[in-house]
Image (cartoon, helix red, strand yellow):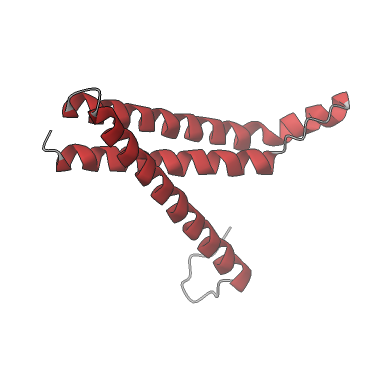
Length: 126
């Protein structure tokens, strides 16, 4: 069982991995925020401000929900799928690691999109 003692040093490799994950998540949240803002403003040309921001929020929530659901599936079934590919001697190029990375991107992009759509709604006083 891992120690909860704050005096236990953390390995530099673990700190570097955590730093890389935080930087990557921040980058994809920023991409999602830009997408959410662009979609909100783009929909303003077609619909009222309330409908535009609600639709942009719903699209962002769809991306976020799909990303989280698919990520959890990749984590839960990834080794099983890889084992089945080996057993059937089928090479599709799919790996658990690549799936987790792809759905990490979708999840954080969706999170940024949802926040930006909500912020757009607040800024437009909807």
